[in-house]
Length: 265
Image (cartoon, rainbow, N blue to C red):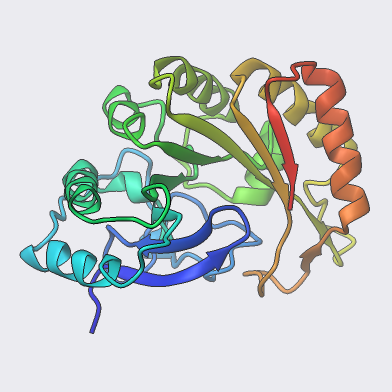
C-alpha cells in the first residue's frame, strides 16, 4: 500500500505526472473552494495560512518513490499537491530534496521529470514559505479571483487568510525571487453557476481584475481551465472553450507581453 504517491496519471497541464502528498491522509487546506474536485474542506480542517504541521518523510518515502520511478522512465512531472495546501507542511523541502536525489539517480528516456508544486497561493506572504516554494522547477499557483468579493465567494478562505491584494503582491514577489530557469504558472479555474443567487467568477469585473493582477505578477505561464470532474458544490459547472478563448484574449490585450504564454485547457 502506498503512503505518499498517486498515479502516474495523465494531466491536462503536466503530461504524465506522479502525485506526491506531503500532508496527512485527510484534506487540510486554507480554502473551501466551491469547485474543488476532491470535495469540501471539513470545518475542522479549514485552517489559517499561519497554521503549520511538522510531518517529515518517513524512510519509506525514498523507497516508495524509487520503486515507482524505476518503472516509469518516461515520466514528465513529479508533482507535489493533491490533498490540500502542501506549503502548510514545514518539511516540504525534505520531500523535495529526496525526490531530487532519487530522480538524479535514475536513467530517463528523454528529459528528467520536472519537480512541480501546486499551491493555492494563500501562504506566499510568508518569506519562509516563498523560500521553499521558489526551489521548485515549476510552481503552479492558484489565482481564481482578483477582488475581495469574488475571492471570498469562490475560494471561501479561512477567516485569517490575507486579502487578495496581499496574495497578488506575494505572487509578484515570488516571481522576482525565483531562479531564472524555474517557471511560475498562474492557474485560473473559471466556472459558471446554475444558481441565480450565486455569482460565479466568470463575471466581467473579475476577469478584468484578474488581467490587471496578472500584468502585475508577470508570470511565465497563464493557464485558463475549468472543472473537469465533479465539483464540491452542485451548482458549479464548466465554461465552454469559446468562453475560455474570450478570457484569454482579454488577458492578452491588457497584459500586453508576448513573452507570457497563455494556455487554454
